[in-house]
Length: 268
Image (cartoon, rainbow, N blue to C red; front, top):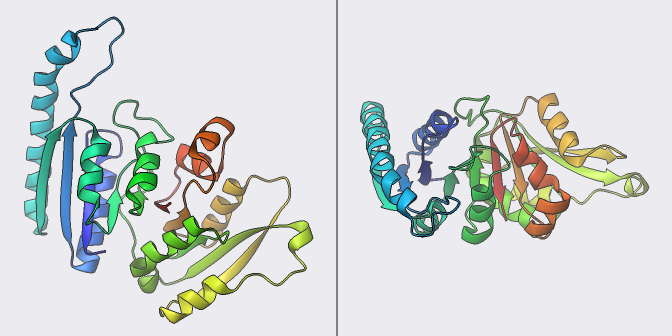
């Protein structure tokens, strides 16, 4: 994870995102790209000519300049290599442009406007950029790169991409637990060891843990397993089914993003 892309915007998790990005850059000797976007399209009922947005733009720009100034002061004190990308428009467009050569995007868990989960921006980035997205938890400052990691495994291509994207962290982790939810009728079968063999080839020693799935929600089971092993990071595939159906009917990704209890690395 040599190239870290950070979404810079003023919300409740602003400091948490910055701290995670700093932890990654320090750990892997990488470079930080800060992407700050001022949206120029702000929906306002009845404002057909955009007059409301135009009047707000100078205020938004002033606030953005203050955030950039304070953030760059912090980055200079930290002494890490970084560059700053600033623009007007839609955050996802600018982030996607810079994500083409990024190893990970640090974004979320809130949307810039609503500041509430689940983050539409995180879902969009995971699906359209195909770059792993690292989502901070509001309750956890920074990332313990050497701490235990829980990998949510269901054998899907999305889960596989998440594992590949997380390899630099998994190699440094003190403990890697691969958690797989299984139906009662499947418990008699031997679990798939493909992911364990893959991790072993890359120098990662992991423990496979089956989670018997009854009536309990899979997301709750994974969070419980993460708490049990003291995980400082969870790795999982994102939106294995249609994102629209997950947003309407629910899904593991949707529920995990609704309340992020620990840093979450997602890939689609």
